Length: 296
Image (cartoon, rainbow, N blue to C red; front, side):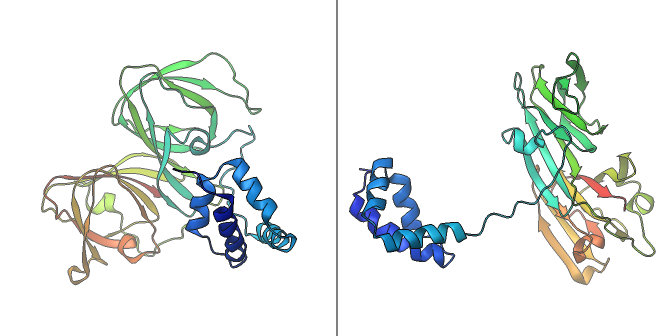
């Protein structure tokens, strides 16, 4: 029986006023309120003394509001992709000023109109999409156009609002990096050693613009790369089960890290393992990791 009496609810609400004022939350109160009907909650509040009602009201009004940082300020007035269609767009990893998004659209599925900043993409599972562009006022403009995106494509998409529908017969999966309005330069590195220059057999540049490099790391079992640097970057694991990070290139500082496909990894240069290191594929399969690295 999920119903509760107004008396037991009254006891919970009475206790909750003190908990709320202390900045805590009672699981008992939460459970009771979730199980109670509107009539039971109304009856319980009516039974409270005026003093307790005043305390509860003051506590609720004084409760700290959730600090939601504004990530985007689109002229169209549309939401960002994750806010508009959370069932299709998931944050896989994030850094201050950027986030890695995983988009999944099943055949026939359509997302809601949304807006984007310029974003660098990588197509994991390709397919056919129908895209309707929107204007700066958030209204559709022109007819929808279809695009075929092959797996492995690394397009860089311009900023702007649109709506996307999967008109093919395969699920489309894409990952991309979005800079936010909080994006700040991550700073320079003296005597920077580029992984693309010292280990071109492992590191490939797939695409780049003024802000981001889309890169791919591929290492066979047991392979080790030379010491190199990275700026802030976001990683998406395609294949692999373990990688060993030699911090500063020093094997005595080795860190064996278990990984799994479809994992997103934030890699800020402020964290010692990520700014300067060498890597070893210490796993049992080929290591393949996509990454988006900031250029400044």
